[in-house]
Amino acid sequence: MTEERVVSTGDGVVATDMVLNIGPQHPATHGVLRLRLVLDGERIVSAEPVIGYMHRGAEKLFEVRDYRQIIMLANRHDWLSAFSNELGVVLAVERMLGMEVPERAVWARTLLAELNRLLNHLMFLGSYPLEVGAITPVFYAFREREAIQEVMEEISGGRMHFMFNRVGGLKEDLPNGWTNRVRTAMAGVRDRLPQLENLVFGNEIFAARTQGVGVLSKEQVLQYGLSGPIARASGIDMDLRRDEPYLAYGELQDVLRVVTRTEGDCYARFEVLREQVHVSMDLVDACLERLEQLPQGPINQRLPKVLKAPEGYTYAWTENPLGLNGYFLVSHGEKTPHRLKLRSASFNNVQVLGEMLPGQLVADMVSILGSMFFVVGDVDK
Amino acid sequence: MTGRDGKKGVGLLKGLSITLTSMTRRSITEQYPDVQPELPPRSRGVIALLEENCTSCMLCARECPDWCIYIDSHKEVIPAPEEGGRERTRNVLDRFAIDFSLCMYCGICIEACPFDALFWSPEFEYAEFDIRNMTHEKERLGQWMQTVPPPPALDPSAAESKEVLGVRKKAAAKAPPTEQGDES
Image 1 (cartoon, helix red, strand yellow):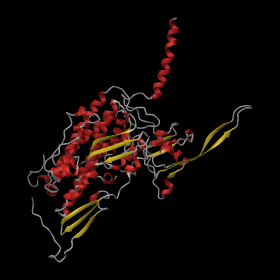
Image 2 (cartoon, each protein chain N blue to C red; image 1 turned 180 degrees about the vertical axis):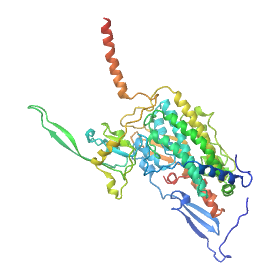
Image 3 (spheres, each protein chain N blue to C red; image 1 turned 120 degrees about the horizontal axis):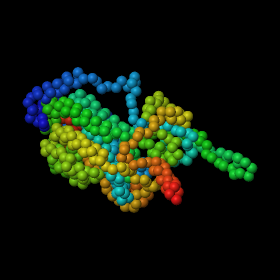
């Protein structure tokens, strides 16, 4: 690596360490995460993520909402993976009810979940270079996002909070010709994505700011329970879509590749994201093909007027774009859950910052923070 | 293509070449206030009310996750149409308002309505300077009805709606007796 230049304040005149607050209103934290750093010159001595500035009490709110209303709330904790969040809730309730979901709904859900993953990853593919100083890539990323967002809006009516899952299937059937438009959008994204990739990957400045920076060891990943692209960049070969297939992933094993890296630095984490975009696009194409072959049939179940999950408990976890997202549902047979515990990916992923940041320079803090790919709403819930 | 062992300067040149080629292409910017966006019919912009269909049953207001629908109604007695007939009562809607500063645009009210009185409209330009004006009363909600688009046609492999199925069943139930009648 290049040599590091450290600027310190005076010759030991100032004996006390400096405490620097990053956030809660700081552009690099994209949200309201606060980091309390203790600095020695430019080097970070200790770091503590202070969370909770956006706590909305989602879990408590779940307890006073019926299952359809919970979908609306679940949409919002991680606003970049709204569809995947909904999915966890409905999977949990369906398992409790022992409900069989129509085949078309299963494939359509898989398709939409992958489109959602693309939206999420493209967001970070654009915003991370922005944080380390490259302004252009975000425009390329958002152009691709727009193409996907258009088809998502056409089917669900929403651009962020899709609100398209229902217990037993999807809200409405696909509009006529929608699958073709998804295919066109995918072809377009595939065609234009190399522009974004060539802009960032291989760029010397970007590489200098990310390679070898913020290395996360396999042990740390396991200790802190990290998941998703961050864990896979440190060599943890785990993906629920492969290891515990839900939806239609069981039949997509030949298309699904689990992307891993061993370096564990910021660059590796970013690379995993890039690769996963390609995997998701392949999955979308496979789902489309399958969806068009399926015979005519319903896309949802008819539900009783008052939907009550039977007494008991279950844990449904899904591979969300940012990591493992789990819902622990305890029902006392009422129309609202007794308890719905939410395990969100970003909450765990952010905790490791306290161990990663000490010893790093303040300038590297931004590239490390950005490469942890979190959504503050998902941290604070 | 990991980019970890590239030649110095190659990546920068590659990036600049992309910028150059993009410069010659047409921009994809949409001139929004001058050119209106084309929104799909399912777009969730604003909620429209068809007052004639509303029976003030309060289902939407009760199902709303953040209770942003306000309904006031009273009962009116309709006198018997003829001597000895029975008097009837019906609900009259006094107030139907949605506070769009609270609304989370989930669409549960529209799904819950059993009488098809609520609809989504893709219209979105109703920002206000005063938050109190975000509460749309029934007159304003009724005006949105003009902007409600017809629902999109469904995928060919979609199951037929229960309305269509019901009509089919009725037609099928009627058809056999006439055929038998012809034979005998």
